[in-house]
Length: 216
Ligand SMILES: Cc1cc2nc3c(=O)[nH]c(=O)nc-3n(C[C@H](O)[C@H](O)[C@H](O)COP(=O)(O)O)c2cc1C
Image 1 (cartoon, protein in one colour):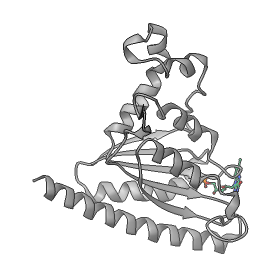
Image 2 (tube, protein in one colour):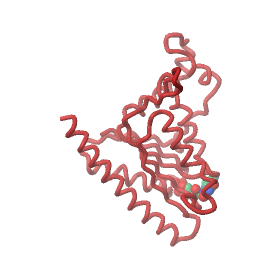
Image 3 (tube, protein in one colour):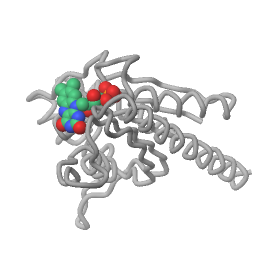
Image 4 (cartoon, helix red, strand yellow):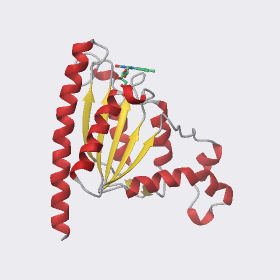
């Protein structure tokens, strides 16, 4: 099993999204001997915002690309390769101003690539990153899964839509919500998120075993 672990909180070891996502990754490793993890921390090692050469180069067909186009796309190509190599993608995302941290948005800008992760035809856009499982761990100060703030959640719908657009539709979500509402709220949010995380890992492990049996 190849796992791609994308984390994006600037809070490192203090981060709730990192803590729960790390638990999922560690648990998957413990249950799958030989699992291989690629960790991409876009907060610690930020990706550049896209520039003019990238914006034009991404639209040029491979056979027509100049050296400058290839150079502008090199990092993006490496990130896309990382994505295709993964069976399971675990993404840890804090909510920043109702959406994703800009560091994670930059990752999205690098991996949504015409000709690599999406194909356009007369039928419209088709996502090419199929057969993957994604687990998204969201941490928020407030509560957005229900109640009056629901309409302000541009984090989960956006990430689901962007991943779905490139073909990643098998998505599980864990929310660590209400962490700004006091110590008891934090404990409760973590307890609930960790129970959800453990259940998701059990499901993934069963699915992988089924896939191995089917392939044998
Ligand atoms: C710049 C910034 C913006 C934030 N914006 C929101 C927000 O819009 N809504 C919210 O509920 N919490 C917001 N928070 C609180 C974080 O979502 C909360 O601290 C969460 O735990 C962050 O995830 P992490 O623990 O993985 O870093 C914000 C925090 C920061 C640092």
